[in-house]
Length: 101
Image 1: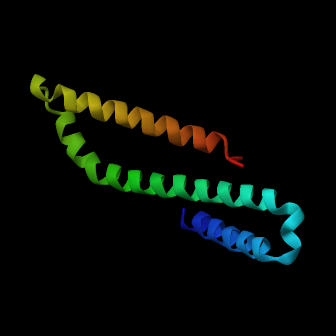
Image 2 (image 1 turned 90 degrees about the horizontal axis):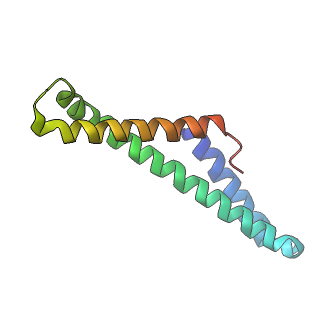
């Protein structure tokens, strides 16, 4: 993941260099659009990383309730189940569609 963020940073730097060039005027809208896309992609990946870190931290806590059959904890099991399903769908979709641009 870090290599992807490095590539995004590199492309962002190159885009800024093009933007500051005197010869970029005919392509200014394209350059600005590209810069916006790179920024959005970097933001999404950073949020995924934050979410994954939180998920990794909380997973053992949720798993502790998996074996517990008490009804009072059933809502925790359901939250974990839904969270787990949603995360797997998001990551599967991202893997299946690598052409995000």
